[in-house]
Image 1 (tube, rainbow, N blue to C red):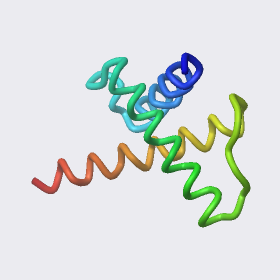
Image 2: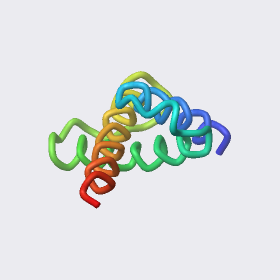
Image 3: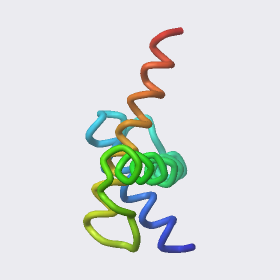
Image 4: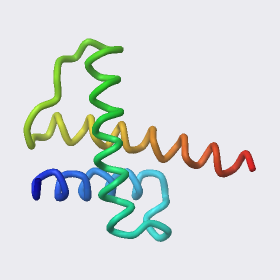
Length: 83
């Protein structure tokens, strides 16, 4: 469980840097973004692109989690800007 938190924090932090949201996000938001982004990225990678399953704490999994987190942040920003 500790690895999930660390992995989520890292993926969420990288995604927030990419999306320019680092200043407005805290540690908890980065962790949640990274964990949810991991599920989104894993779903897209395995079901849409048939790239295989994401497993373990490795570079491939981190890249997929960051991509999923960027997608999540993009969706959240689109919904916020719509209001």
